[in-house]
Image (cartoon, rainbow, N blue to C red; front, side, top):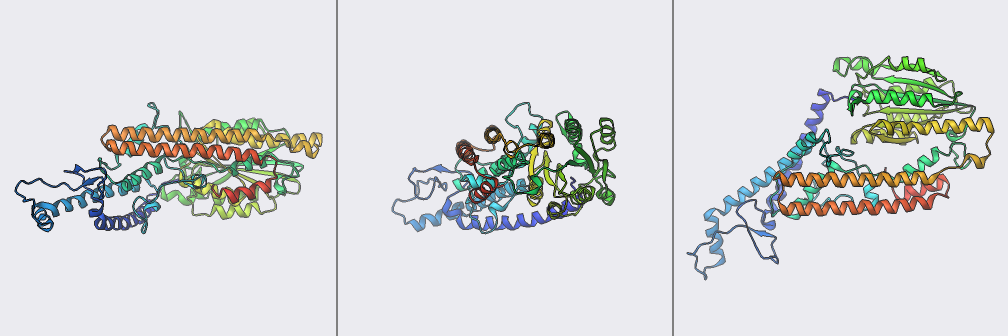
Length: 524
């Protein structure tokens, strides 16, 4: 995965043009509604709670020279002459600065601006309000972080992002506070998984079951696993005290060692030649190499293969998937159970179409089950990797550490062990479909709980920081805290709803479950 300067400048220019158009539209609406909302950022006085025109009225200078019987029109005329227009102009300028700050911050953090696009009323987007919307929403760039933890190593970088947030003083209209809340949520929103994830795991654990009509899930004479590993420059990034590449190599070695003796494994790497510089793009994008050909596990040979490469270049997912089909061309699905693991920490950067290639791969004669593992991937990367898995009717999982990576590879090991038992004992159909489905429901419930807990703590800490640093006043702090509590309550309620729903599905067939979930929860 690479951030290329040329592409980045073009994308930034396009985003900036869109931002400026949205900015002009917002200012136009502010100009039209500034009188109605009675917003001013300085020299204001509170009015009665039942004031029909809003929480604060424009500041009016008291004057003993005004006769009580003077007409309203004369008063307005005098106020205008004494600086009313100047205050209106200052208000508009301050509101312009406010929205400039928001838009610049959005540009810097790369967050979506769809919620405030042209034609959308300010503050109309309230974020997810239902379980379906929560599942369908995109995770934020800070999802999975632990900002709430004082010793979190990336806390300083997150504070720098929060420091770019605009200042909001007391007296702001709720519509603008909603916009502020949406931006906080856009940063920290977690990735709440669809119940389809659990059903897909049930399906993977059901290898050999007559309940699964998909031929890929029927055991054959041979069991083959190919791992396609991202060796692009971004895999040099660290998780803890080790690079992502080091963690991936360790997990692959342990996984291969645990496979049955008769199972075969191969390892292909991509992006390991050249560098992520423009002049090396062609070399790097063409560097997809089979470093450990399909064979039984050999500890010394696999260790030597893993030592042959380090992360350095570009991300050629489409090219590597196409070559994987060639790797397994001699192992057609009528006699082989084929499983492919694609491991990547970002999107395709070599101008290929990995989604289309993945679909072709799944429909080929080798009919592999393609599992996609995102290794500490951002929201954009997760979106594409999920699309690759969906196109091939495979599975997607995002992992952020070595243990999670190992757990995903464990799925293939469990299948291989069931295959070995099937070969040895000629299992009956009833024995082959024994699945501990409750384990997956419990894991799903725990995943939702941990994400909700982390998201709420992160946003709460962000609110406290913004308040302590003077970015928001007491009213904004209370309002945002209320929004955080509403979000936490929604996620808690959704977790209970989905967990109970999954329990009710345990006796249904896979096809029945899939159709029902697609109808009820059209999320990830």
